[in-house]
Amino acid sequence: MTRFAFFNGKIVPIEEAKVSVMTHALNYGTGCFGGIRGYWNRAHEQLYVFRMVDHYRRFLQSAKLLLMELDYSAEELVEITVDLLGREGWTQDCYIRPLAYKSTEGIGVRLHNLEDGLTIFSVPMGDYLPVDHGIRLGTSSWRRVDDTAIPARGKISGSYANSALIKTEAQFNGFDDALVLNQDGHVSEASAANFLMVRNGKLITTTISDNVLEGIVRSSVLQLAQEQLGLPVEERPIDRSEVYIADEAFLCGTGVQISPVISVDHRTIGNGEVGPVVTQIQKLFFDIVRGNDPAYGHWLTAVPQRELVMG
Ligand code: PMP
Image (tube, rainbow, N blue to C red; front, side, top):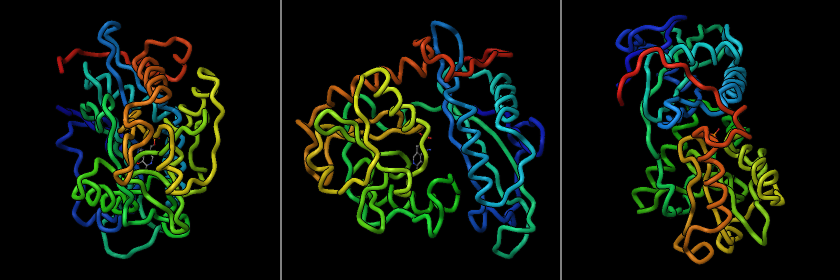
């Protein structure tokens, strides 16, 4: 189990990484976070972290949206994380959570004139949604937060109340996750993952101005589809009904990885089986993240293990 956290500028035992109930971010959602995966390669006896510097660049951008001044560059945050993971010594897949938060203890909703805190911790993590058989989505009765309300391109703590409403409604209704629409009725994404579909030999996803997180896996998949599969890629608004007639659909993200969608609102996608394009993308993705595809080795950070703890 987790033993350490980076907290108040240093690595401390996890029990010491605590905040007060009066913390601003706990009361008002004025925090932002990242979600990064580490993959354990048994044959290499090595933990690989996927696109860590890109995750930290986006993390710093989310912090900027909240008027936060963090004293670290993306590269420094990578170094701190490597140090933290080396001490944890994971020998299994894990998930890394950097969290920046308005740490002032007191009442008064605003962004300015507040202290900023930063913590990073990691936990073991397997698959968040099934990746081998397909998942079922239902269109949410909730709409996605709009850039005019809380910017969805930032991973802002408060906006995850929207994601939580969406996820719980979907599961209470018997679905695995939801297809979430924007105020204008176009598709945005799922509760915590980007949405992509295949139609007529093209890979199609929403534009980033459709209130989606600028997903790191999304941009990786778009790049791989073009470079490795020679698939044309379209970023454009998607109608709900267009999803029903897609040949294939899937969610992607750090948590869900590549998760094939086999039905939406009880309509079968394609023939209801996991399709050929998503199968190829899954294979590429899992080979890369686990360190088995040297062509994309530059997307990985290998973590030197300080001490080995069997997971
Ligand atoms: N959208 C939302 C709302 C998310 O929470 C996530 C997970 N971070 C994603 C998309 C996927 O982003 P990424 O590929 O960077 O993990």
